[in-house]
Image (tube, rainbow, N blue to C red):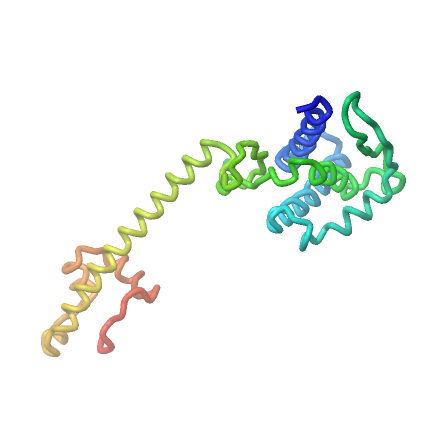
Length: 224
Ligand SMILES: [Zn+2]
């Protein structure tokens, strides 16, 4: 890789990291209130840009902020520069108008990011929802860190185990209800408390049975 290319890549990585930092960094409460307000607004715009960008698969088609970004960037003062052995590249030195507006600031940052080779490397973690720069080369990476990946799969297996247990309980309850249905009319009339009867047969709590009925998870004989 030539020096110019390396520098371009470095610039693109820096731009992408800057977006990620601005998206993730909490607003510093020690900052003056006016600055905090500015940072919060910039972050809001940037989050909208990025969420929508990811939703569009990092493609301009369908990305609803293309016009906003172009309008903001058209107000910029374009300059040119060149590395010693690299191509000419554009950069923008100041706002001509709209200086210091949160959306302008967000647009500038986002523009630097999507016009570089890292335009598709920012993702949102499936667990903690923080943004991260995916430099692993695997586009289907879902988590920002090993910690999030581990915690998410642990949470998932707990959830799946609970679902399994719940399904087993429902099966036991349905079996008990079927037995109840097979009782003769006389036997059923003698039953003072059919819920306790089901509870004894299925080894489930009355609370579970009530809940299953309320959630429509089991069908009771109409005579009850
Ligand atoms: Zn995460």
